[in-house]
Figure (cartoon, rainbow, N blue to C red):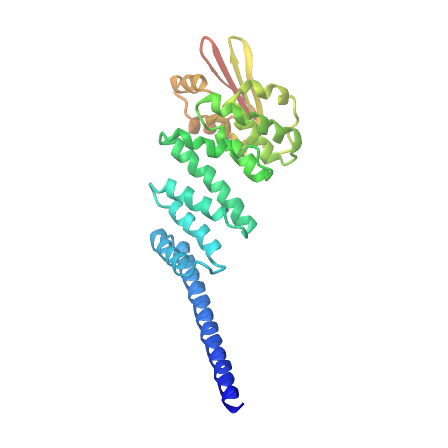
Length: 284
């Protein structure tokens, strides 16, 4: 009996020691992972993207079961996004983060928006297949992601692709009350299909300090009729079609000059003409 008791006592003692070692190791690993994440965040604040990426990669590889890995995956993707030429790696990293089960909702939203931005940058560099990462988000239930994808898609010069955002832009104008969001949707429509603005031309804009009125006539027909807040004037002027831009350039106008003249001659109509096109702008 004494021998059995001693054996059991030794086994129990061994288990206790083993548990202490395991717990101690677990706590040490937890602290080490937390330290790495904190160090990486400081480097991110200082915009030292490569150094921060290295810290986060170490955390992910050395402590794969840490609950901090999900957050580390997001910040590693952010570091890759900020390093020129690493757009495809950044997208893959964000996608890896999004596959995790438990995610911070705000980080999840930010990751989706970042993928849209990265896909657009790759599209501009000739990687046209990446536009699917934008169009594929037009039917998301999350309005922030859906609306952002539509607004970004409106910048695509290929109208066949860009027009896929029209349904969402019109949804914004029919359902949303936020004036700034609605104004941005109108400018996006102007980029993609000015005729689509016709049904909103009679809308009353909420009371603002100053409003920009923009009209474009082609061969006597009103093609664009837009009223937006003055603070968005720059965006609206940049969104006019290439034909109108060429006319402005031909007459010696650029965006800065137009804004300067509209500021100086408040209430007066600035009219720029060619044989077929007339552009009228005024502020009130």
